[in-house]
Image (cartoon, rainbow, N blue to C red):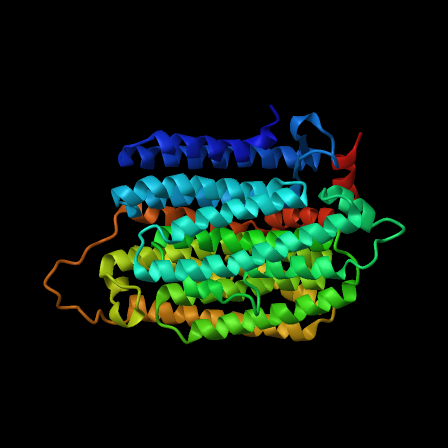
Length: 493
């Protein structure tokens, strides 16, 4: 069997397994095994795709564009590897932070269902199956966001579900129009048709529908309101998983579609993307600076950082696309880490509200260091990963003479630094407002901080070895901008 099926079959196997497992102790252990296997499979596939450039599996032996194809190029390989690392780390974190027995049983079941949807979205080779995997993600994430059935979780879950269902309707309508105009939903076949000598006319309407659908999934301006209304409501393990993966799948779809086959009217679409990228950065950054609840600050910063990724797509040069991919991977790691540490802070002091916490630097200096690394990476401080992601995008902006969006990106970096310093000052430097509490201060154990250690090491490593990572992201960008290799491998007889 082609190993390309494993990113889907492996989480499916664990979904079935968790239906049968009744022991919450065993569930936590089995989940770590599943996360480890997923990371191993993704690493193996990434090594293979570096050698072969594009991996293809025609399900059932039916060749594209007639059958279902699974396709992995370097871009999807990088995204799969990064998401699998996040999944592995979250299984370690959940071992300590998902303790409720009833929640535990459901959590791991829908956790791996969500992972299956994310993996399927990254490696699918046709548009309809991308829709299917988006719906798998949506159903699993809705259950996870409302898992404890509290009032504020149900309220956040309804907002999340309602707005994402709107995105799904736009997606489905776009599917119908796209198939009606082209007669195919194979991404490679669409690329062949759209990049041919006689481009298909009247494609703007399906392009608009897909743009709105993916814009909602990615939480770009002005379609982001579902995210800050819902991400602060579930348990911190669920929020951390969502922060690292869900919006990035939307970004992946935008980059894939607008480089592979939505290549008509580029001046209009790239101008629109540029404007929305700038607004996404500024609005998210400014909204984050007004809040004092850690999860809300970090949720708005998810939106702000999405703007950088869309900026790279809008500039549309090899350096800009490579910078967007580099920045996406960095953000998946650093953003997940900040949420994980906010969960540790809440466990130690019983609140996410910054006015009610403090004194952690004196009591937990190692935890302070663990927060400092991803916070400064998000702010773009060298030599951490965020600095190199931003410097690639800034240089690409200057090279293409897009000075306004470049200035907006620099300004947003200052807003990010302000928010991260605010969390640092409130949680770690100022005195504990309840310093004279009767209960002894609880300290974080090694098992609770190990996931943050791993993610922090990844942020540092991405910075120290940025040149090597850039080589992979640049190769992925060149593949995206020249679709001939992708089309040749998928449609070969």
